[in-house]
Amino acid sequence: MSNSLVLVINSGSSSLKFALIDTVSGEATLSGLGECFGLPEAVVSWKIDGEKHEHKLDAEGNHHQQAVDRIVTLLEELGMKQDIVAIGHRVVHGGEKFTKTVKVDENVLAEIEKLSDLAPLHNPAHVIGMRAAMKAFPALAQYAVFDTAFHQSMPAKAYTGAISQKLYTDYGIRRYGFHGTSHYFVSREAAKVINKPVEESNFISVHLGNGASVCAIKNGKSVDTSMGFTPLAGLMMGTRCGDLDPSIIEFLLKKGWSQQAVFDELNKKSGLLGVSGLTSDCRGIIEAMENGHEGATLAFELFCYRVAKYIGSYMVALDELDSIIFTAGIGENSMPIRSKILENLKIFGYREDEEANAAARFGNQGIITKPNTPVAMVIPTNEEWVIAKESMALLHA
Image (cartoon, rainbow, N blue to C red; front, side):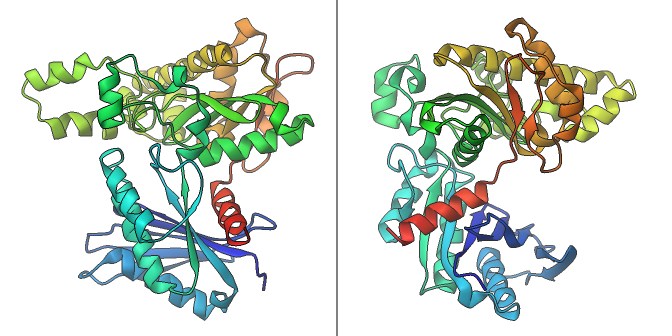
């Protein structure tokens, strides 16, 4: 077995994703998911050779710990445990404290917990997952890789809100940005496609999944991004509203809505789901649109329009643009959405190559615009590989 295996863990409030990554090839030799934590139906599932396996967790007790313990048992059964050299953890919010990957210790855990006000659904869950992994793998070094770290290169004019500076100094209210590992990875891969050093390359990276964000990348560094203080800002998403007049929140509170109801509405009932009245899944939206569903059609049009608007605005942040990059579940696989976004950008000269766009799906990368026109391409993301490689780099530093 390889001595380059890193176990990557992404611990959520009610779930835990894991993948065993070969840091040389980037391949996941094993991956799985623990879900429904806190409920009687809590399970851990994984795939081996295309076959799905499932293990039911005990109704009582710490489901995060149970899940990690089951992963340990699985790795022992498969003879892989002894080949793991480190554990890498995805952490959504590093605030201004964490600008790069760090080795996890009690001080780091305490600092991540302090940032919980900035990511109340994510950071506490990350700490639970890290503690469970530290208990299960006491001899292995553990590393925290932050979604926000890549965006710490943004200039003040990009991250500062047009609000009182007291709100920034007292509460840290500013633009942080997320999906940093994804934007970092695809920009490095895109530089290879255009055969330029990433330090001399300029991209607009478009991460479209259930969560979605755009990032302006200048000479390999993030200079602006659409998500803000939290992942709610920016693009319309699967269930998140994206940019919204903040007075709407005050309006709903005055109408008798509770703070929690407003939070749930904007985070869990908006976006593609809210506009379509049907589903948050892009595939369902397109299928319903093709069958004449008005809500789905509006959701599709609105989503593509807003993405194109952000791309157009982020050209301001760059001196030149080498390519637009589409990535993540929707960005990598939805040909109709990419096609519509490029159509919305025709004023800038973008022209879709329909054959190339159709081919760039299901893990296939490629340029999807016609020759001698501005370039747009598809690059499959691999956030787990970034987390694994960052962990390995620190391990050997």
